[in-house]
Image (cartoon, rainbow, N blue to C red; front, side, top):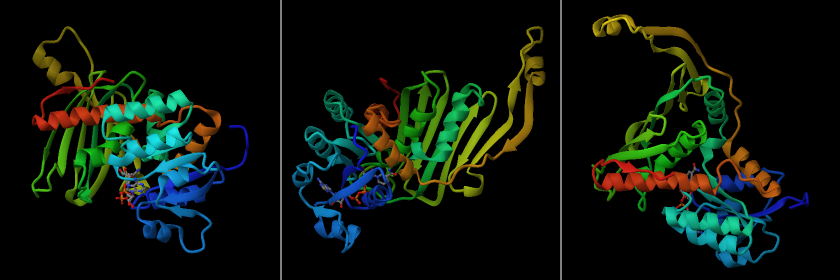
Length: 348
Ligand SMILES: NC(=O)c1ccc[n+]([C@@H]2O[C@H](COP(=O)([O-])OP(=O)(O)OC[C@H]3O[C@@H](n4cnc5c(N)ncnc54)[C@H](O)[C@@H]3O)[C@@H](O)[C@H]2O)c1
C-alpha cells in the first residue's frame, strides 16, 4: 500500500459499539469512512445523520463490492463475526473485528489462515491494550521494574447488560485475558484454567464467574467477572517480587499506583524452621507513586494502529493470533465451567 490517500473503510454494525468506531474513523486523517452497514437501515441512518456523505447499506455484498473500500471494521454480535470477516477477507479487504474474534478457536484460526494467505491485516479490537495505562503497565513489567510476576488479580463487576447469546465470561473476560496476553513478559503464558460460575437469576447462563489461571512461570491470575453487582469495580493488580501495581480504572486521578511495598524473605540456612518463620519475613514499606498518564481515547490509538498495520504490512499489537490465544483460554474456561471448576489445560 504505497498511496498516501486515506484508506476507505466500512463499519459493519451500528448497534451499541459500532457508533464508537464510526466516530473514531471519522476523526482520523488516516481513514475515509465510506459506508455504515447494518441489517437495520434506520439504525444506521440515525448514526450517520441526515447530511452525511457516508453511505448506508443493509447489504454486506454491496459494501464489499466497492473498490474504494480497503478495510472493514466489524461490530456485529460475536456469533456473526466469522461469516462477516471471512466474506470481507475473500473480497480482499483488511479486517478489524470486535472482541471476541469469533466464537470458537477453529473459526478464529480459519480467519487467521485466510488473512495470512492473502497478505491482509486481521486485527482484533482488544480496546484496553490501546489505553495509556496498559501501555505503561506493559513497560513496567517488560523493563523488570516489578521483578518476577507472582500474581494477578482482576475484578470487572457492575450491573451489566445481561447478554442473550453469551455468558459473562465470554462477554467480559476477553478484556482481562487480552490485557494479560499483552502485558506478560515474553514466554509467560497461561497453562491451565479453572472456572466456576453461577446463574442466580435464571438467565440461562452464568451471570457471575471466577476464573483462576496458572501461568507458565508458576504465577497465578484470578479474574472475577459479574453482571449483577450494584457497585462498579474495575481493578487490576499485578504483584511482582520487587513492586506491585494497582490499576483502578474508576479513579482517573490515581488510575495507576505503584507500590514499593511488600513482603521479603531472606534466606539463612543456619536457622531452624520456627526461627526462620519469625525472623526471615520482613515487610517493605516504601513509596507509592502514581505516574502521570496521558488522557487519550483508546479507540483513537486503536484506529491508528489499524492504519499503520495496513500501510506497513506489519502485524498490529492485537493481531488475529492474539485473538486466537484469548479464545483458547475462553474455550478452556467454558469446558471447566461445565465441570464445575475442573482444571483444563490451555494449549497456547
Ligand atoms: N471493545 C469493546 O470494549 C466493546 C464494547 C462493547 C461491545 N463490543 C463488541 O462489539 C460487538 C457488537 O456489540 P454491540 O453491543 O454493539 O451489539 P448490538 O447488538 O448492540 O449491535 C449489533 C448490530 O449489528 C447488526 N448486525 C447483526 N448482524 C449483522 C450482519 N450480518 N450484517 C450487518 N449488521 C448486522 C445488528 O442489527 C445491530 O445493530 C460485539 O462483538 C461486542 O463484544 C466491544
